Length: 243
Image 1 (cartoon, rainbow, N blue to C red):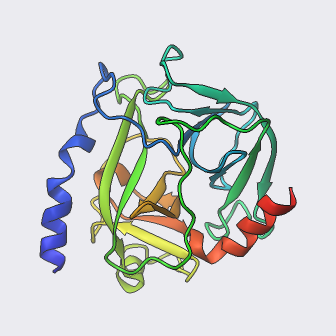
Image 2: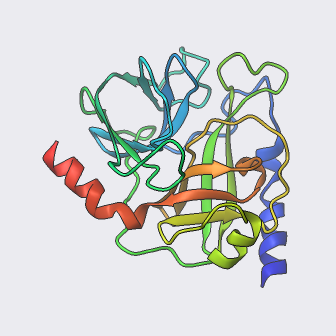
């Protein structure tokens, strides 16, 4: 089964390996994917409510603008963009900068976004995701010859949920908690690249992970550690309902 999964994943990689500087719209962004543009490094996020985006708490986002409907974030002339300011950012109260646990943040937008074919909500989980489930991880990649400009290539990769014991073998110096989710190929190949952090992992139409840490390149199927969304559903629902 592991050999089949590895083969299947590798067969799905070619579209994610082409960092094309002339990329236009060959690969359309998932409609829930948000580009979190700031005066520091950008992050990815996922739209879970017309007023709320979820991302990683490790994201540092001064002067944030939330961009939805974008395939190439550097092209402000894309037809279906929605650019929205934010009202507040709410980190998980137990998050600290020296840990990858509790790495979750909710961003309340200044106004409700308009939902259409290019901007849609992603489902939140009602049950946990099983090991070996297939998920899609999406974010933007940089042209390695021009990493000072905005990332210009939307990328997706289909990878599987890695069992906790195998993930722990990959990341021996990090305790893998029940609140964490690992996705990728075992062992991770750790190929160099530059990609936008906090990539969401969506399994069968449901958001199950937000990237917290990766030693390597998740878009090339290296194993990454994600915040397990199901673990935090009570906190997420409480924040949305009371803010």
